[in-house]
Length: 66
Image 1 (cartoon, helix red, strand yellow):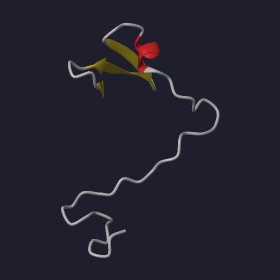
Image 2: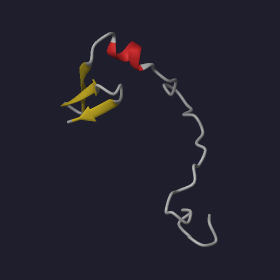
Image 3: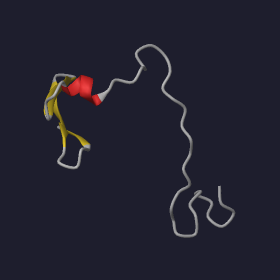
């Protein structure tokens, strides 16, 4: 943490990057988006009976919406 900003942000308010540990435990292995999407730009994922849309944007980012 910064001495000047107790929340850990720098003088410009930006937070310092905190290294995160990789996921662990059963089922925590990464899945590639190419494998998940199988050549499609959008898929529907059912979670708790509700449909969520996972799509690849024109800027090659992923967006998940309900």
